[in-house]
Image 1: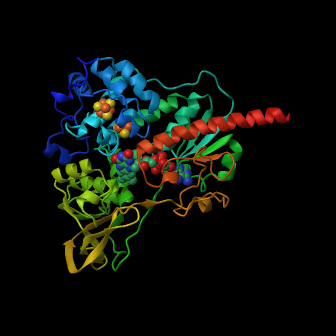
Image 2: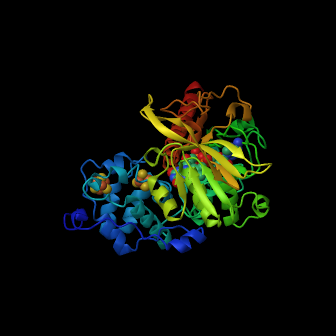
Image 3: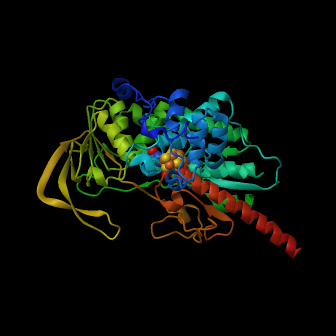
Length: 478
Ligand code: FAD
Ligand code: SF4
Ligand code: SF4
């Protein structure tokens, strides 16, 4: 092994090249080039094959990272793909958009003295190669059980659960209010991080496995939740969180102040070739505008970078903490800065200026205070530190809360936590309603794709166990 692996001492870390900045700023294609086989094998060979691999421990899916790195270094890519896809339904997606600096790579033990193994880029390379070589097949079941399950929400949690349950022989019906499958992977996350064809390709594969998708069906509006329960042996709720957190203050209702997701959905729809009136009218188009984005998470980063690509005159991001305390991935901040975004750290909006339409944001400087109970430093305004930022388009990216599902589904018995997320039994993923399970952001609050996949897989296993147990109980009673 030693001759093939442990190369980190001599071989420096190399990420796939980023595309030329000029091209990057003017189109929506992914910014990273792909590894070729030589580069992937070389980078994989830097792994020191730890006995206790902290990379795997900190990957929410506990991917078998050292083993698929070794197989890649040896050029055994089909085996690497088999291993990587055994624990992850969408490795090519995680390889692209996981915040690896906070998960696997951030915990790679060679990180301290040497830069980490480029785990995400290798994971992406393995699965892209598997697709190109035709190794990725739909997971059709060996036998049909004659029972069906209903899944509400076609985001990563719903899709991962759907694939797992279909492979176990269930008839799987996925209901989504959108016209396309993928949840935030199709309409939230921009193309320059995750090309839409990657998501659409998965949709085709899941259909080929026999999963039935019912798009443009909003449960609670077009289809009663109670009817759905009557139709299927078990239900999974994987509806995500979509209610935007609002900004208060004078002028907050002016035209030109828009929610982040409206802006991103419109941009993604445009990229997919849809005709979107709000874009055509200019309301959600940043071209030629002075854009101010408020927030410091992944959504804010996606908005600023989308605005650059749409040809904004200037793009500024106001965030009330500093760079070290922002929730978004630092890799994405760096990408945004390279692309010309100006970050105005330690600043918060107080009021929005303009007659009818926004023309500026009055902001105040903030300073970091003492850590609160969670260990996070509090923020407080600096007296008399107001300043004004001119703006033609203000995008609110302050995070999301769950929609009130018990009301939307007409099910007052569906218990929620004080945050509005669904309450589940942590071990069995079941909500307060018998046979109704839940997974993903609607349980965790706004989180990550990789956690949604993990929850979807775990929930599927628990749904299967529960359905089997029900059958055993019925037989015993007869
Ligand atoms: P979602 O992906 O939200 O899917 C829920 C689905 O349920 C949607 O398709 C919705 O239409 C459907 N639905 C909702 N209500 C109903 C109903 N009543 N009837 C029928 N269908 C319904 N994570 C990362 O890991 N990396 C990133 O780079 C990243 N970037 C992000 C950028 C943005 C702009 C946003 C908003 C999020 C980002 N995330 C990122 C977070 C990630 O997208 C989510 O954590 C993940 O998609 C949650 O998966 P989910 O399946 O729980 O829900
Ligand atoms: Fe890293 Fe995400 Fe892949 Fe896990 S799934 S190995 S955290 S990139
Ligand atoms: Fe390899 Fe780093 Fe994981 Fe260790 S922690 S097994 S060096 S990738």
